[in-house]
Length: 129
Image 1 (cartoon, rainbow, N blue to C red):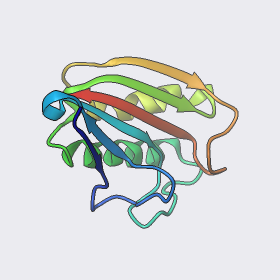
Image 2: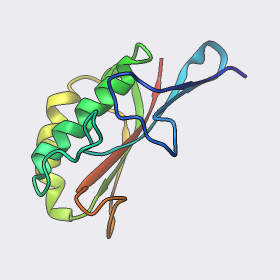
Image 3: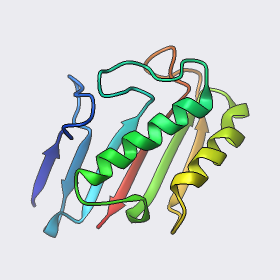
Image 4: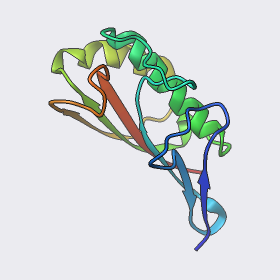
């Protein structure tokens, strides 16, 4: 089976995982690691501001998808992790700006914490091209 491990040049390069993996015959399935509000320099964007963090997360997802010639309409699965259930509505507003076509299946979970104390949300996706 063909597998490509991809580090988009315009995204932060993590030391412990690959942000994008494309697999399968014709490289049709795309896995994108959970994206947080980290910018290309590795800094947290929007500490304490769920809307600013959500925009950064969706911009990171857009960059990751673009690295393999995909977009939001190619999403088939989305897992969302929030640190506070009150963030659901502001997240939905930002999400609606980016997901304007077909909607993927989706799971939203509230968690006690994420990998950095300033992260308010994390989103991981699977796409098919």
